[in-house]
Length: 375
Image (cartoon, rainbow, N blue to C red; front, side):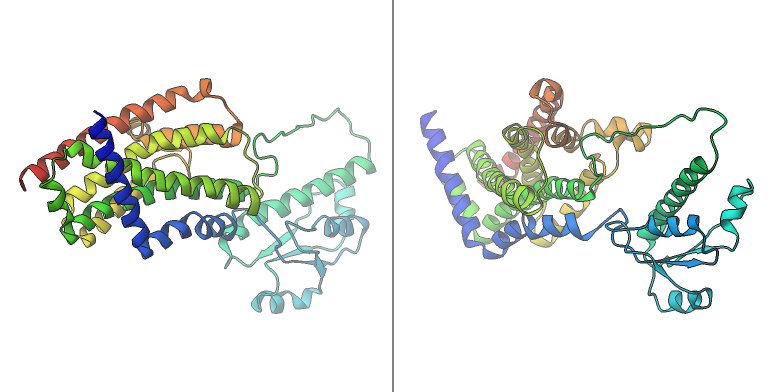
């Protein structure tokens, strides 16, 4: 047993040295857990931020001025007043994303109980912010009108106030969500790529034949690749959490980092097994790259990271229970955002272990069969 563990250790050291000499792959790992995480977290915004807005105020009343003052940073830039004749010109030139037109006698119609209309002109070339920003503007205008009416006349009946408390992400900051999803996606992608590329590299360089003539079992060869590549990804994830997530992006981590890393270690057994499987099936790097695309996209899309699992069809939800990536995302969200303990996520841990080891045994059997034909 000691001899087998020694062989696994030194074979793993060989894998780490091979990765160290592969400059391109090493740069890809560093980039994926540093700049890629930062850019994905900050580069794509699903909420309105610093949107330009102008007001065409044809009422010039107290209410219209209050509505104009309701738009302020960081969601909107300070609203600028323009004349009605300028509306088409500024929209054509793209100076403003939103232009709110307040008609004449707007305040008088509100006082009289009529329902006047507000016109919102939207530059929909920025499609995502255009759709969300319209609802923001409608909410801000309705709130200002409701406060104005409430002060102007006493309410006839008591109103119900709805208090919203947002848990785990109070400001609904998309950066928190995007950074976490980027890390989870990169763990899956990089682990599969590193493990499969290491196996194909040995085939192309002929070192796999050297291993076959040595007194080594297929289990020792596979175990060495698993622990070496998993260690490289684990170190990258740890440094990413410390320097990129905490220090650069200033994202608070509610739970235990150690618990999250422990779950990541368990998930790496599955990801390395997929890499071994694809590296065994593929006969070249080009084939391996195509197979990675076919596997990575379903794993990431069905994991529940970007869209909730509940939004998927019922039959697909049952299938995703057999994907370790779904359970990995589930307990990672619980630990990182909700600060849950091991007692709350041990079922997800057990599912990742069971499914990961099952797929690892399948990959090991396929790898053993492939090398037995070469002996």
